[in-house]
Figure 1 (cartoon, rainbow, N blue to C red):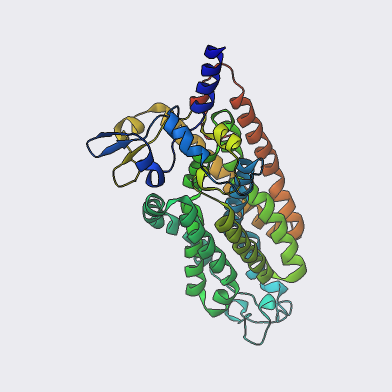
Figure 2 (tube, helix red, strand yellow):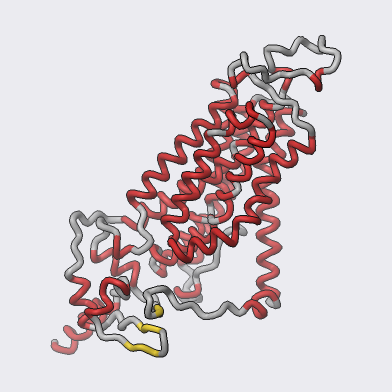
Length: 398
């Protein structure tokens, strides 16, 4: 019986991983090698005793799933703030729908001002050249390339929560200001679109952070599949909503609604999300044990920051598997970009579908893709021949 009790205690203690280094380093024995601090094992009795002093005012079940849903919706809406421009631009540039248009009575319609200040914003139309239109569509991605490194550095300094919160607020505000920027001049609109480029810079790092911190090893496939599904969900959510709003309330409403939803989810993110499950006031001990079970203890520097080894860049870029993944990702985004950018323009301009119909038709293929993505994540988690620690492949290519 003593042996059985000891075995049970060992199983229970092994479920607990490290505490936050800053808060608990003084209370637990540790090992120091150079400037690297090795956290004690999760089976340490001192570690378990310290854990039991953690105060939980109200333990709710399924907090990890709440974080999963919140993160997926937040990333989807922030990306949706970029995508919603695509159905709106077809109306913004459609001078034939302007109240000033009189069936070709103007000698030179390209020189006609269809956005005078006395018209409501919803009735204003803008004669952008093809080059200007291309800049508005591509400028977001160009700005993303310029912002990736600063945002990555911010992730290391401030963590996923604060970095993504700043991005979410900035992108939402820029989206809400697009109607005013368009009425000011082309350059103001272009700047707003460049700010929207922030939305694309941090999506995958946040997905990785949520999965690493909140997903149990046996659920990582599903977590990764659903979180990376923000690509499909952003189209599924934004395109039908944008099409409906354009037809019923005018093109400015598209940006106002997305900005409002983005700011609302930013508030939820600020209040409810935590980078470290240990810091969440609503997670119970049992769920925390499940999340921590089987994960390797972290190594941190003496100043409390994570100690990472140098990435093997040469091996990464010389790997055929990595290049195969790059090609698959490129193909995936090429298809998604077609459905959320060029298909709506074709359906409205050439086939004369309504904006509401266009939004729905553009979202349908992505619904199937999201379902397949979730299914592959579920299957991966239940493959008996693959170790749990290796079931971490991002299902972005499903």
